[in-house]
Image (cartoon, rainbow, N blue to C red; front, side, top):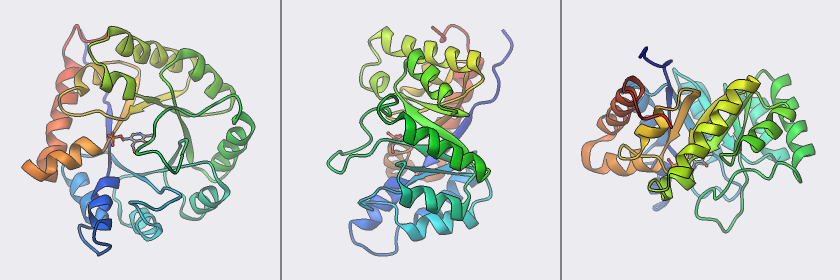
Length: 249
Ligand code: PXP
């Protein structure tokens, strides 16, 4: 079987900022972490500026936008404040996510029906600024079709249900079906949330998934093996999965 197309690894550095914010100081610096991730093979860096600024701060986004050698995927809610910031800094990509103040982390995909009008408008603004817009959605072919109808050039499939229940084959099958729908509709398919070196292989092996976003597990693992090694471990696991057969549902 021919090797699958290269799959990009974007490292989410939010939780480097989480550790920094525990003391409200300057270290560890998420920009320095991002540069080390790039040196270890990351294809891009993801950072989520939350409304409550619990980890990444505005200054981090500005610094990332100029310091990165690869590409910045700016993750944010589709609010006026965030869209205006994206238009100013012009990252390569913006991933729009739902956000609730009380949540521990992003808990589900975007609600595409009720928020459809606002998302369509946000995607049009991003496109006009030359930014690739992506919608974080549940792993469901119908959600992919709705995202495509809203004008999304890309979607990020929520891998949380799979990461929480990898023992249920339906969670992986849903990702594979949604990814196939994206490919059929000409929408770039990314995926992320809850992925780690231990569970990434079956997701990495899904042919239509072009990009994975992985944060917490890499930053957590970095405590024990160092950041560069943690990135390389995941990269190696993705590459192994992508050349192995029999992993794709
Ligand atoms: N993708 C999106 C849209 C997210 O909100 C997050 C978490 O910030 C991730 C990917 C990364 O998830 P994790 O930190 O669990 O790897």
